[in-house]
Length: 339
Image (cartoon, rainbow, N blue to C red; front, side, top):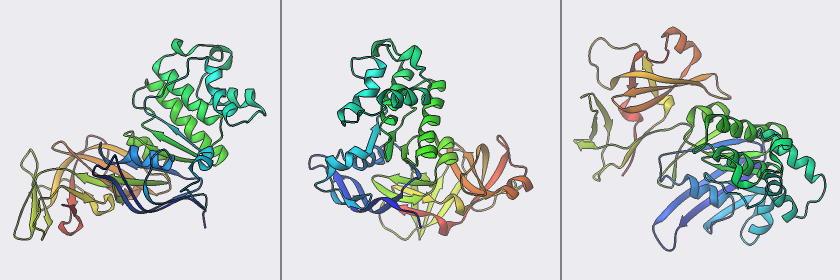
């Protein structure tokens, strides 16, 4: 049985007495795992990362490595490091920036070796970049140097908030490779919020789907924010091209969002005639999921992306490939709601 690094119970967070922006009953993150946080903007990914970095006050219990965090945040923070989407550097050389955290923590052994190792991991050659001042770096190099400063600490947990959002493609690849190298070589627990879903599906050992501060699924959940019409125990979504999706709904409030597990979505051959809840879509992406013998297939249905989890054998039998037109079957009873 794997060890639990984070154990969260009854977590709630709001900003300055405002509405609750995070409300999680329970969440466990295993030591040595790669956990991806996904969801639309405003779903609570960044707030959750700040709580896990012990940078935000909260109600409820957050246990780290068996220790209750309340009253011990400063001590626990020594084992956790957090990389922002838009990182910044001190007005110093690259080497001084990377060494700063080690010196701040009173670690004086092998500082130079650890800093140079971290620089190499992010593609910053020490002989070229060690003495370079902060203002002579590109945006991608700044992000890589900021990550190197965190990797030099050899943290138990590395938290990444959209680490590749505003950098060039080459830097993005180096950031991703460096983060995963820490996981593979040191057993660092990596928790990342990103919109780079193909990468996340490939490397994550666990994916948590968030919506408006709540966990709505473990895995690449389909979250459909759209205008559903309700009547007579049914909810109907009409797509831009006139296709319709039906769900079972006996509530009396306006539907805010619908959730569908990819495992409950079936890919079929394109039907020759219209059939209830079999939608016409075009495959946009196929990703082999880590730790599964399955493929996550994304299909565009009139501007809405629906993900399906199917076996490798099914992809071969249906000759599924990007740009292929397929049928997407969703059973009414498999649609869940948030009012």
